[in-house]
Image (cartoon, rainbow, N blue to C red):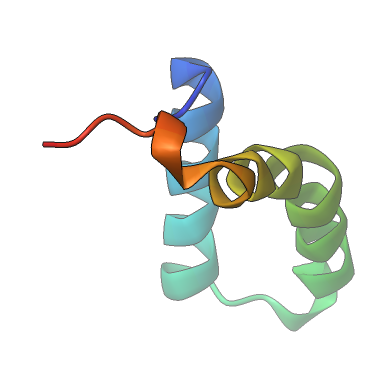
Length: 55
């Protein structure tokens, strides 16, 4: 489903940092990273769910 394994691992790492290392001064930086780097990949999945293989 995810087109780039490295991207997936970076997304998971960021999720873990957000949950476990909440740093208010980093919120703007994290937001930009999510919107610029990760949102396009997630939105791609939403656009055509039929391309996602059934388990």
